Image (cartoon, rainbow, N blue to C red):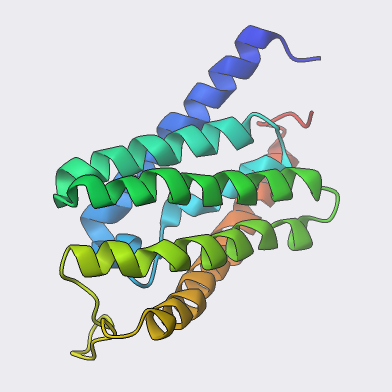
Length: 186
């Protein structure tokens, strides 16, 4: 049984690493990490929920920290609170699903994919339209006249981006950590 101090330390470390990786993604990937595509490398850390329940509050707190920092960095103002609340909720729901389904890792990793695709895509059109941005990346095609089209586009792109991250980066991360015993299963 893990001590309370050890558990809290694990939560804090996961939160710090998630927040740092998310902000690094913003610096190097820009709108691919926070725009209509949502390709956050830090989401691979959701695989930690296969190994420890501390990942659920750790990932959620890390997402809150990163999204609050993004309000300052992007200048999104109060609209950025949508991302703080609902983006963090999506991360929490995804991590919780992953922990609950941890005995079936490939299925468990679908939790963050589905949660982010459904939740983030619902508020992202409002957030992006409010800050005057909603064109398909690398094109001049604007989707800002239809919430339904923006949601559908976000559902596909956010889901696809999250799936790539979870299965190409997250699953190997999980396998490596599980094999090395770095993160003890609870």
